[in-house]
Amino acid sequence: EAGVAQSPRYKIIEKRQSVAFWCNPISGHATLYWYQQILGQGPKLLIQFQNNGVVDDSQLPKDRFSAERLKGVDSTLKIQPAKLEDSAVYLCASSKTGNPQETQYFGPGTRLLVL
Amino acid sequence: EDKVVQSPLSLVVHEGDTVTLNCSYEVTNFRSLLWYKQEKKAPTFLFMLTSSGIGKKSGRLSSILDKKELFSILNITATQTGDSAVYLCAVVTQGAQKLVFGQGTRLTINP
Image (cartoon, rainbow over all chains, first blue to last red; front, side, top):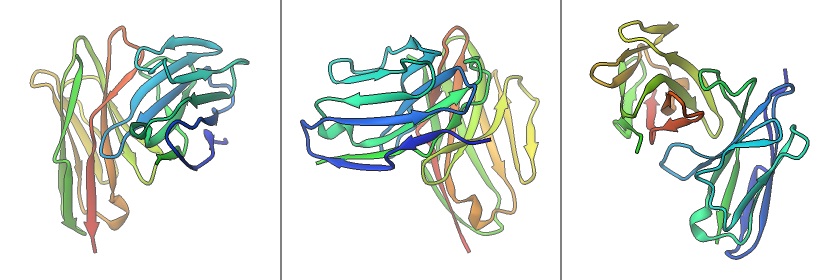
């Protein structure tokens, strides 16, 4: 079974530029999560999708971050414009139904450095 | 606000040692606690604990939950260099559909 795929693996940009990350969850998984993990901290949930609908985006900085999952499969996360404090690893995870008791499978992450 | 705190933040031991990692939490309506191992970038699932006193074991790793004292421990015996990683603890609350992670413990096993 293929795992969660993410691209790119690394990205370096200057502040105020835009960046987009892509995630393809495990086939058949209805729920997709985007996490932000700042160095030395645990992952923080940014947004959770159930199929193509948003379940929770309470911690997404909506003035600069946006995410979509138009067809309920893959997803993109965008930052526009980026700030220095956005430097982090962005992890995508998926689970079958979204039941919080269910295991979430994480992708390899995208490491973003904002200069 | 829900909070998960792990200790120590960093631990360096020699191969063969036994280590105990701690996770304490303050959350409303606790549902379950999960442990993940994070090597490089992607966290991988280790255990899920829901009931007090009933531990989980997988090889050299074991974990137990104390719902009265609001903490969990992850124990690794006969450590190997491959156990070097960041170990993350996360809590799921009733009603919320998300994991709240601690800051992680960075474990380094020296040969």
